[in-house]
Length: 291
Ligand SMILES: O=C(O)CCC(=O)C(=O)O
Ligand SMILES: [Fe+2]
Image 1 (cartoon, rainbow, N blue to C red):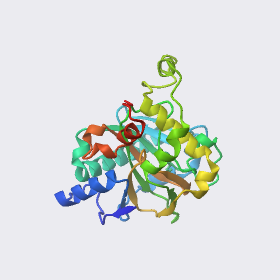
Image 2: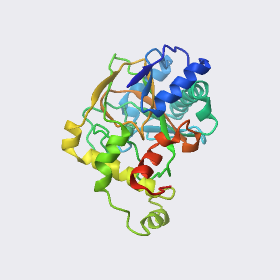
Image 3: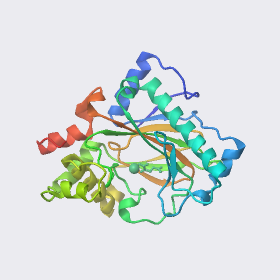
Image 4: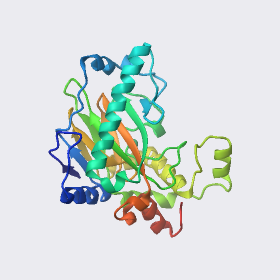
C-alpha cells in the first residue's frame, strides 16, 4: 500500500527509474510515502498551529496560490494574515516542486488547486455524515465537479507534539465501484444544467461527477460497509509527507491535528495508463461514456 522514499529535500532530483516506479505505483492506487520529508516552520509560524485561528464554520483554512487569497481564518492581524499566506505559499511551491521532479509527466499538464491547512483535531469533530472524512470514501466534491480529472494530493503532517495522522485505507477502486455502482440511478434529466444555472455547481456536473459523488455519499452512509470492508490502518507520523490520488484510494482520516495539503487536478490523458483512472473504470463497468 505504501511505496517509501528516503527523500529529505523538497527539491530532490529523481533518476528516471524512480520516476517510472513512482508513476506506476501511484496509478496502481498506492501511496507514495516520504517519512523524512519535513516542512519546517519558523518560530513566528508556529503561532499558527493554534486552532483558534481557524474559522469554526469552515472545514479547513484554505489558500489559493493563483490569486494569493486566504480564507477560513479568524482573529488574525493584517501582518499575521500575510505571514500565514506566505507559509502556505511556501508549502504550495514545495509540493509543486516535488511533483515536478518526481512526476514530470504529470507536472506538464496538471492544474494547481487549493492549498489547505488543518490545525483542528479531527477525532472529535462533529459534522454531517457526508462531510465526515472519518468514514471511508473516495473524494468527490458536490459543488466542484471535475469532469473526470484526477485528484492528486500532497499531504504533510506538521504536528509539533509527536501525534500521528491516523488513516484507514479501504479496498481497491474497482472493488468499491463494483460494490456501490449498481445501487446508483441516473441523474434526473436536466439536473446538471439546473445545478449549473443556480450556481450550486461551479462547473457542469457530468455523469462521471454524478456517479462519483453518489459513490462518495453511499460509502459514507453505509455503516456495515464502513466496519466490514477490507481495510488497513495507516499511521503517518509528524515530519512525514505522502502523495495520494484521493479519487482512487478509499481513505478515512481518524485522528490527528496539524496537516498541510496541496491539491492538483490532472487530465486523464496525462496518465501513463488511463485505463486505471476512476473515469475509465466506471465507463468500463457502465459501458457508457461519462465525461
Ligand atoms: O485530513 C485528512 O487527513 C484527510 C481528509 C480527506 O479525506 C481528504 O483530504 O481527502
Ligand atoms: Fe478525502
